[in-house]
Image 1 (cartoon, rainbow, N blue to C red):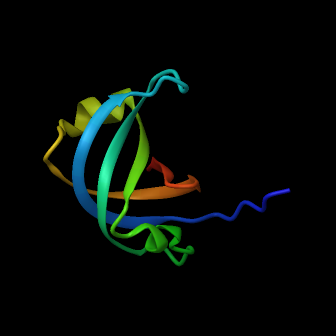
Image 2: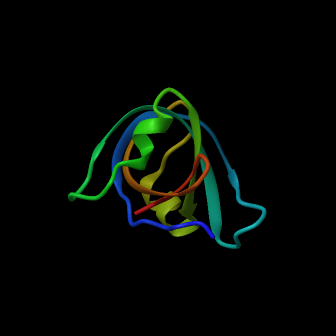
Length: 90
């Protein structure tokens, strides 16, 4: 059994690609070159181990439309790591 811990991190990186998530209806995936992460609200920062890697961030379609982002744009956001290099944006 896998332990799940509450975690949040403030991240910065550059968007590599953006596409509809084939597994989660109403979500898109941001592929991000994660350049840096910082602790958020006293929670563990699980993104620290992924700095310098490409991560996938799940984002609701409504959030994506509001943010008006595209590949090549920088991204600063607060995220929660789910598993592997897969995250969800706050």
